[in-house]
Amino acid sequence: MGKVYLIGAGPGDEELMTIKAARVLEKCTAVLYDRLAGGNILKYVNEKCEIFYVGKEPGSHYKTQDEINELLVKLAKDGHIVGRIKGGDPYVFGRGGEEALRLAKEGIPFETIPGVTSAISVLNYAGIPVTHRGMAQSFHVFTGMSAEKLNANWESIAKSEGTLIFLMGLENLEKIVEKLISNGKNENTPAAVVMRGTTSKQKSIVGTVKNIYSKALEAKLKSPCIIVVGEVVSLSEKLNWYDSMPCFGWNVCVTRTKKQAKPLTEKLLSLGAEVTEINSIEIKETAYNLDKILCKLSEYTHIIFSSMNSVNIFFEYLKSKEIDVRSISGVFAVVGTATASSLKDRGIIPEIMGREFVSEDLFNKLKLKVNEGDRILIPCSKESRTYLKEELEKLKCRVDKVDIYEPILGRIKNEKAFEEVDVVLFTSPSTVKNMIKLVGIEAIKEKISIAIGPITEKELKDNDIEGYICEEHSTEGIIKKIIQLKGDLKA
Image 1 (cartoon, rainbow, N blue to C red):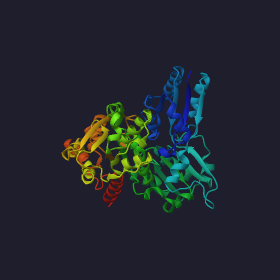
Image 2: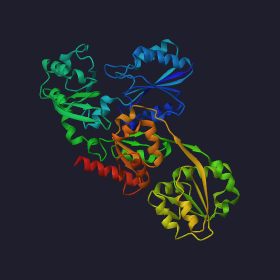
Image 3: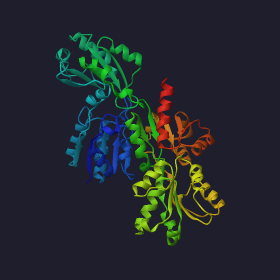
Image 4: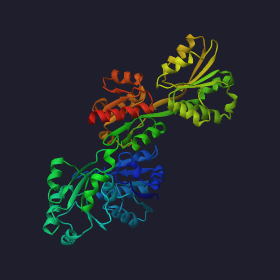
């Protein structure tokens, strides 16, 4: 017998998921998710986890609730550790109670992991506090999906002085405002509708109970939406912090390996972007190729790294062979600030650094430092360019280029995630080639493409994909380019 975790994933922003939810997802062997779970939640599951999309599209469910219940039971009885990912909180209009009761009936162990409910968090991101001294001392949350059949005292609701929040009620917005007005709610009471809150597609409209329905029609809002009625809505203009962030409104696809993606992802999130990670590259380690040069490691005058992966794999290899790094007397050289940072994490400051994300810049610095007869080691990717080796050999250096890893095709855990993407970041020719294999060239052409440098840009052009190139060929250059393009297109 396995176990089921009913996991609240929050309202959409991946950073609003709890630490416990992330920890549990890492050990799940099967996961069920639907459209209300944020697109990046699946990046927390392990590589061997089985993933099931169970739909929950309005009017077009991939799976009925009974079918979802049956699948949970079957997977648990098959011995799986099952994660049932639910948007918001499992027990706030999420049918988590129904799933838990079915599991209890079958004697299947389960846990519920609370999530940040959209009823509060989405309004927060729209600058609307659900309570505020002097305006609202209470708030009330209702399901809006069945407003006509809602078993509620509309007269009492309409006369409440607290904040009224209706989840999943866009299709019934007209009926909701009719019932509020007909039961005594002042038609001039502030009201708002927030679409897809906490994500790059967030859109808010503000009005009154009287005109909010017509404004929603004009804005062409689509579910999921949250409706809020109350004086606190009047604070939205002053308290709306999310919309003013530099990258708000863009879903940016980071295509690097999982390890390399983290620093860039965190920076983009801090600037208000939503980030879709598609790890188009996975790393197949081949550090055993270093065995053949191990006996002459101390003879190298220079060791050159062109990527974070090469740094990390090289030093893990030394560790596995119990080689003291102090036995290496050569000068360390790197391409790019990210590679330099990885080397510094190992307690080594590179003496030579090409600041741009291209080998040519590093060579221009190396040729002033190396001498004829110098022995140089380049531990690198199997697919890396031979430029440095060839140019250094022209200077009569003895160069060993050793392939210590091979980039292989990654996989997409959430096939629907790319549909939401606005911008795709390409950091190497491999990311271009692999993304074409994973999502298709036509899908990429529909997005804004950004290449980190000229070599990557050439790969885009070779595939007839239009794109922008960063003036500064680094992670910082990518961020600057995104902010620049966002400003240009907004203007």
